[in-house]
Amino acid sequence: MSLDSFLYDLLYDIDKTKPPERVVDWEDGPLPYKLYRGLPAVPLSADIPLTLTEGMKQRKPPDLKTLGHFLWYSCGLAQLSHCILPGKESERDLFQMYRRFAPSGGALYPNECYVYLNIEGLSKGVYHYDAAHHRLVQLREGCFDSYLKRALGYSCDVEECFAVVFVTAMFWKNLFKYSSFSYRLQGLDAGAMIGQLLEAAKRYGYDAGVCFRFLDRAVNHLLGLSEQEESVYAAIALSAKPAAAWFNAPGMNETRERLDVSSSLSRELPTLQHVHYVRSRTIQPFPLLLEMNEAAMLNSIEPLLPFATGRTSIFGEERSMSLPSPERLTYDFAAVSRNRYSPDGDFIFGEVSRQELAILLRETVASFAYQNDLDFSSEHALPRVSLHVCTHKVEDLPDGAYGYDGAKHTLQLARSGDQRLWIQQGMPADNVNVLQVPLCFHVAGDRRHLAAALGYRGFRIQQMEAGMLVQRLLLTASALGLGGHPLLGYDTRLSDSIYGISEKGLCSLIQIPVGPYRPSPRLTAGLHG
Picture (cartoon, rainbow, N blue to C red):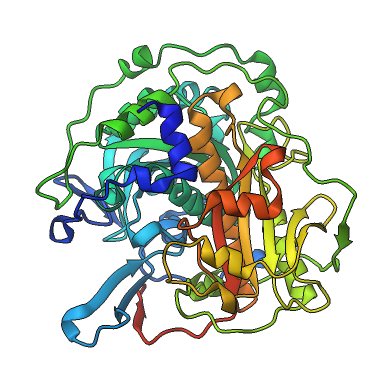
């Protein structure tokens, strides 16, 4: 299968990416977290603060205790949940999950977190965040500022950062269940984790810059990763100083030259030979995923042309409806993260007001703006992913399918009427009753997925940006007392036709029903001190 055909199937024909004859061996499944063996570890404080608001942020690098809190809210194990599956009655059918604050397909969490740290009270070097034990495992000790600056394409002054966080995809962790379809999930899940991390950074007063373009083999080599198992998807630089001074600064862009030869950079550091535990006794081959990962790698970093990865607005003036203009939403980030809930069959019928919809849309899009190495200026850059929504019984708003223009804070009507039956018919599974949901969102992006500027890497970036936007939507919904459930089991062609976005070169990337819910019976406990 060609890689272009594979990407097409991931969006429009997902059954082709999951062999029907394959049987999932649940007894031999991998752990949802990575465990290193025989390496020095630094325990982190479990005395987690249970309140985090914008007013608490301080412009100073963290100590080890604060860093541990930040990592826990970003990607730590947050809850242990026990429930009995629908239709089951025996205790043997008890379903146990370790949950994090960001969602993940099947709660499998294929993404891992590594950190290059320069903080007081800790040896400078590269660490793995061991989510299972809430500790840092040291992988490589030393100063690698110059190495990282070059590996990240001179996009940031690493010396000005107290940390660079690396989000990776550990392929087998969800491939064992979803087969090649896991490639799409790994990008979306990575984006959700990054979205949660960026929101946590705001509460602690850290500025962040996200790097999507880097020398893959050089960065993987620094972390000691085997590219047959795992690969870095994004790097997030963190500093207590304003990002304008150290990330994608104008002077850096003017002097940046073509950076090349990832392999020669890797030769500056010895190869790591660490041992980690997966649990699976048998790991099936996945050549297509490895080929896709190889094709998405960068062996050199070329300067991007201005607006090479941007787009023009897809919204016009016709059929445009204004929305109330609420103030930016303020909420306790810790409480909202804990209360975020993904209803399956737990949605209940209820109405949403036009004001609530306006808050949901404005806050989601406003909070999505972030510093990255694709935009020359984040201040006026148009997002590469957009929000669309089908509404039912929203107060003072006719039922219909709408696109949201974040720049003008308006809705553009694409199709009048109740679209819920169409959406329900496009879902192969019956785990969510869309007929009880007042809002059904779709995140859309360019069908060419940045291919002209970034090749196959563009698809991966697009999935991450979609996941980042979804996480902002889920947090905002939680702040309003609503639940949201991200879904990939839907008919992409049908949703595209509902909004009429195909002719604009867009396609639907993920579907998220949002509405009131009643939690199903389950035993849930927080995993914090």
